[in-house]
Length: 118
Image 1: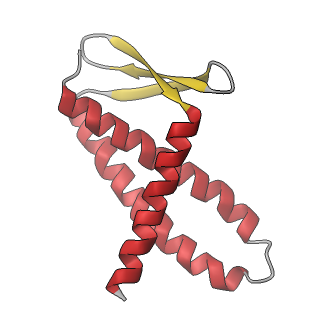
Image 2 (image 1 turned 180 degrees about the vertical axis):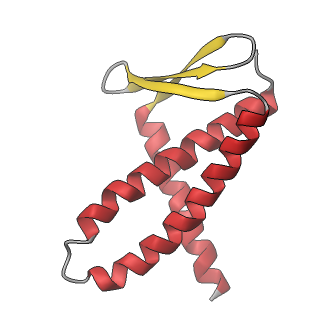
Image 3 (image 1 turned 180 degrees about the horizontal axis):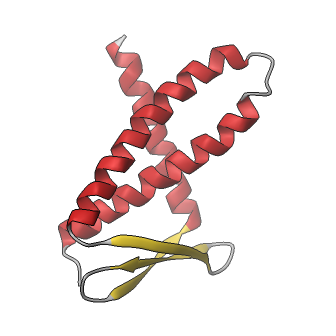
């Protein structure tokens, strides 16, 4: 059994990990655009920031002996996350659209944060 705080950290890691995967996938597409020189530095900065946050979250989870084993898409609306803990394995169900919305929100927050600094 994991604590509320560990579950919150796990969710944070999941959202950051999905954001990293999405940015890496999109990076390949943006490289082929005519205006890629405009977009790539923004994407690089965003990817660096998000990757660092993802790494930090994963490090804290490993410290608590929690690791993500794999994702399984159950249907077009839901996916199961299999998590190994020191005591037992957990299966957490995520709504795909809700997760996508949270990733978009996270990326927008990081973009806006950088905009405010400048």
